[in-house]
Amino acid sequence: MRHDHLISAKQLSRDDIEAVLDRAAEIADDPGAVADAQDGTLLGLCFFEPSTRTKMSFDTAMKRLGGGTVDMGSVESSSVKKGESLADTVRVIEGYTDGIVLRHPSEGAAKLASEFVDVPVINAGDGAGQHPTQTMLDLYTIRENAGFEDLTIGIMGDLKYGRTVHSLAHALTNFDVSQHFISPESLRLPRSVRFDLHESGAQVREHTEIEDVLEALDVLYVTRIQRERFPDENEYRQVAGQYRIDAEMLEDAKDDLTVMHPLPRVDEIAPDVDATDHATYFEQAHNGVPVRMALLDQIL
Image: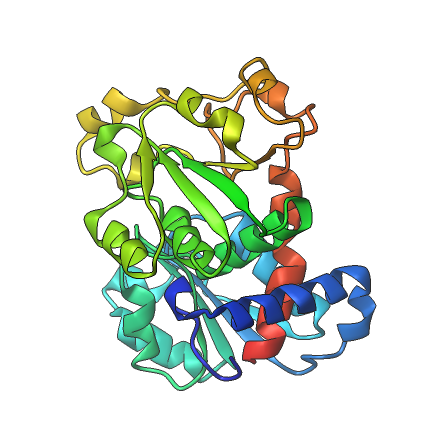
């Protein structure tokens, strides 16, 4: 992956994934071993949408590798507010940094940016498209808690607009995994994603009720109904709050069920789940640092 752009989970082979996860595990065990690995390297952080975990974990990862970061700041305080194009923005930042992490509300923005620069572009989320580094830390969390052999995973919530879902579903086709997708009819996987999964040999099993499949799951990946992605506020109100996991519901699940969430959550996972052995979402967020350290060290 050295010097390549990371735009989509579709470009990751099983060998790519396992190499990053193995390296992340080594780094997690001994972060000091790579303290100077990227000494003198600068990473540009270009976030056109709000972010807490992704932005801060990239910043932390780069600094723990001995490098530094240059932050574009908010859209309101940048030249984007003056009408500067994405192409011009990344071409300018290319001159300051050795790599660019880009989050943008438009699907395909990271691919577009990569065509204008020679430094690596890492997609940190492009609208309802892809979020490949989130997928890598999701896979790391799954491997650490449940493994990949004969795994049954349920992915629940906003499957239509959820870029974390699209990336993860594609990446899981590299492993021995049975995938179940739980959502309202209006938030089913997009046809294009279902087609790609079928082409990869995956069986797409879709449900509208979590109770239909909960007892069989080894991993439950819960996602937020994303208000900001809906073109129609009324459409959002019709589905908001329909899917909620609480501790009582999980009494019917396997004792070792792993519950994940890319965060932030709103009301789809009740706070009483936090105290159960199932809750893994904060560990999942923390895993973003060693995984992104491993990715940056390979790409840069």
